[in-house]
Length: 303
Image 1 (spheres, rainbow, N blue to C red):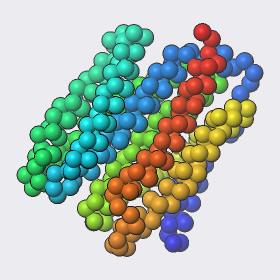
Image 2 (tube, rainbow, N blue to C red; image 1 turned 180 degrees about the vertical axis):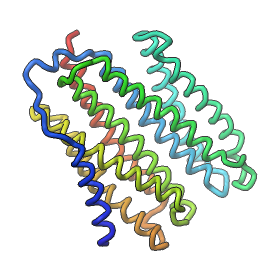
Image 3 (cartoon, rainbow, N blue to C red; image 1 turned 90 degrees about the vertical axis):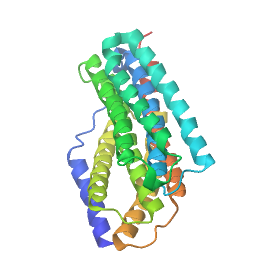
Image 4 (cartoon, helix red, strand yellow; image 1 turned 30 degrees about the vertical axis):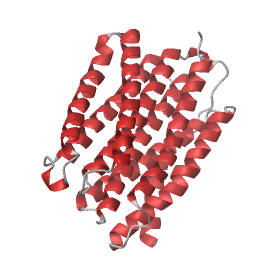
C-alpha cells in the first residue's frame, strides 16, 4: 500500500510541476475562434473514441484461446461501422475544408487499418495456435497509428489559431481529452488481455502501463489548470468534475487494484468484460469533456 501511495504521489507531483499557472479568460477573447477548427477537432475526438473501443475489443478477442462468441463478434462489427462513419465523415470534412493535402495522411492510415482488419477477419475464427503469429501486435499497431494520426491532426489545429487566446485554450482541452482517451484506451486493452489470460503483466506491459499512467496524470493536471480559466462555463466545470470523479478517482482506484493483483500474482478483482465496460464508461467522461470544450468554442466563434 505504501508503494502504491508513493507511486501515485510521484505521478501527481511530477504532473503538477508542468501544469503552469492559472490563466483567466478575458471578455471577448472567444470571439477570435474559428468554428471549423473546433468542429473538426470534435469530429476527430469522436472518431478516436470509437476506434479506441474497436482496438480494445479486437485486441482482447485476438488473445482468446478460442474463437470469440457471436456476441463479441457482433460488438466488433458494430463498432467498426461506427468507426467508419466517424472517420469517413472527418475525411470528407477535411477535404472540403483544406483539400486532399490535409486528409491524405489520415486516409493512408485508415487504409492500413482496413488491411489489418482483413487479416483479423481471416484469423478470428481460428483457435489461438492457428492464428497468424504476431497478428494481435500488428492489429494494435495499425489501430494506434490511426489514433496517433488523429491526435497529430488535432494538435495541428492549434496552429490555425495562432496566439494564445481563449479559443486556443479550449482547443488545448480538446487535444488533451483526445490524448487522454487514447492512453486510457491503451490501458483498457492491456488490462483486459491480462485479466482474460489470467496472467500477471510481463515486464514490457508493466513499463507501458507505468508510462500511460504518468501520461494520464500529467495531462489531467494540465487540463485542470486550463479548465480553471473558464469559471463561468458551468458545463465545462461539470464535465471536468465528471472526469475527476469517474476516471481519476473511481476507475483509477480500480486499475490500481488490478495492478496490485498482478504484482502479487493474485486473482484479478473482476472479469475482462466487466473491466472493459467499467473503463469505457469512465473514458466516455474524457470524451464528454473534449466535446464540451468544442461546443463552447464553436458557439462563441463568429458565424
